[in-house]
Length: 150
Image 1 (cartoon, rainbow, N blue to C red):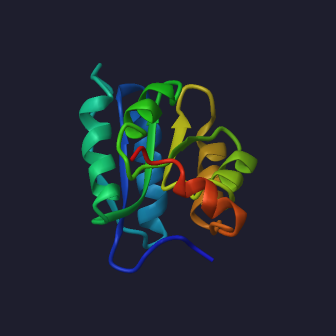
Image 2: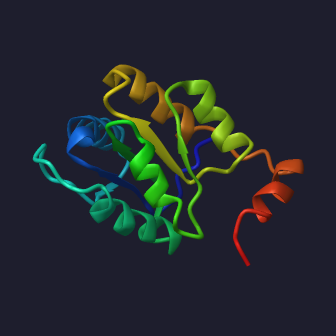
């Protein structure tokens, strides 16, 4: 079962290091009839990932888009930025097992990919796994509820 929601777009963002992979993922999703919203960057020119991560996070956080997919060279910087938002649970995943567990156990709502460390075909497998894995709830729900700082 897919986590995609009717009427919602998948929010995507990247810095320059993730630009080409982001374009590949957008083409892949659009080719399968999945609507996307691209929060930038729009080229491989050097840029700062927070400029694109914050608007993407806000779209997922406020519910206008769901879920999100983000990438930078290592995935670390963009994940750190995304996770500054209270409503975001961004998970850095470099294989399908991590993507599956990020959804099943952590109810991740943004997938983060390390663009310089995985080939495009593997990234697409990870995207498919993330989008097609449901949150298990149960004992994991209690843990998720403890994440926001009160």
